Amino acid sequence: KDIQYVLSYYYNKLEYARFDSSLGKYVGYTTFGVKNAERWNNDPSIIGARKAQREAYCLTNVGIDYQVA
Image 1 (cartoon, helix red, strand yellow):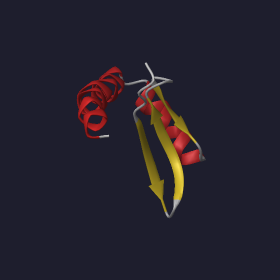
Image 2 (cartoon, helix red, strand yellow):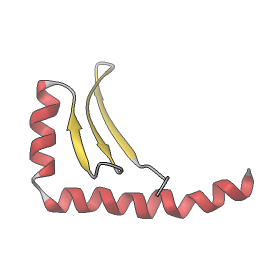
Image 3 (cartoon, helix red, strand yellow):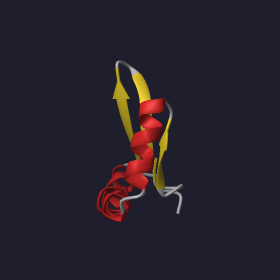
């Protein structure tokens, strides 16, 4: 539960959208980002893919990282 997957989108050094696994949805920070976040949040396949990324990437590698530390 304490593992968090974050995918951020930047343009010209400004973050305009972010997927946060603890929220389970995209959040927009600019007008462009809000429009895209709404579109992405309304597509269940995109949301499902991002949630699966947390399982595939974070939870798989957390054991490796803790063993090395």
